Length: 298
Image (cartoon, rainbow, N blue to C red; front, side, top):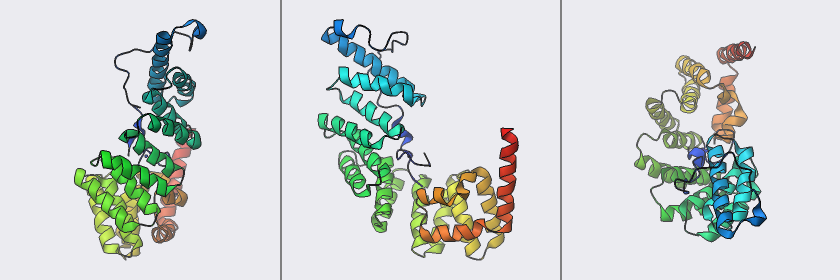
């Protein structure tokens, strides 16, 4: 699986940083005002105050995932607050949320130029480069941020994912294990260790990892489906089919092989999952789920 910060089909565990750094204190947004009233007549302090109000408005809109109306406010805010790292960081995150990754990276680099050692900016740049499929640069930024804040669980997990994409599996496992040491019930890290173990042919170890992940989070569809596929291919077909059907009932999206690939499922597991999904019992489950969804939409 991926972290929630990497805006991909499965939304990045890093919480998308939706709170976007509430660093403007107790100032309240002026919801009823025009966006920039009489700009040319305002003095510098008034312009800055207006910029803060705009940024607060954009921040609150982003908290409700209203990214489109938040974006123009944030764009105006950086014009009024050109040296304020919070405004640039907010704008960069909004670009990422609206899938304008190139402008997001450019804007976050501006924030970084204002405060080069800000770990939150570095972590977000790492996530942005991951989203842009530049996994080496993603790893570089994440490592730089972790040198400042080495115990950041989500960044450790993201760095593990970057190493995974670079086929540096031993390094990926090392980062996942560091994340798990921060929180022994961090099941996404345990799940991803299982993904690597399966690709390495260590099926029994992968099964053990996924069993542990499922025991921590019984409603997580991903480790449950991975475990089901592994059990089925390992000869325990009845338990595998039963568990796989339950996993797909939790989240039918996991029946999409492209979705699984985007969530770091490797070639071996994908091939076995394709075989598993084509079994009559799983096909029947998927048909029932599709019919139920159809009736719900009517």
